[in-house]
Image 1 (spheres, rainbow, N blue to C red):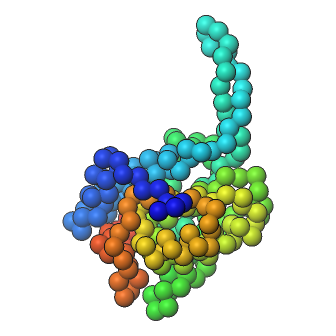
Image 2: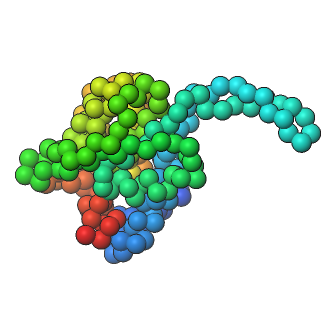
Image 3: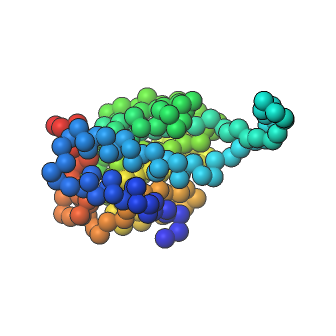
Length: 207
């Protein structure tokens, strides 16, 4: 599928299987979500722009690279907090902006409750984090806000995605890349991914 990368790696898929398991307690769920975020973002960062630099080793000078642009991680609260905590070592210098979106359980539409973001985003490589890409409503609302503030590229990073959400995001952001651990079958009548893993926020935090 164009612009969509599924991270089909044994270490990802084994953790994802345990994450799906209804018997997994919330403490382990939180750990697994933290661990899964690292290979997902690692793959999403594969094409980050770099610039050349010279490095002096103990033996000789050699060529090297450094990241050309700042990185901004944007977790959609609250479930994506579980993803964010795994990225401190991978991207220690990344800045973090927070978006709060809650899904209205009647309309299935996202409702804003928090915006802690820089006003201008043109200088950043933006990674939008959300465990579940279900209806696509939250990703769409967040992506459009990031775009209005000048984000040049948005990398959508999800543990699971539904075909319905992928269609919406790919249509609205045809130049963006989507990274996920798996593409599931469909959404049910309540807008949940099937087979999915349930409500990621509730399972991560225990309530």
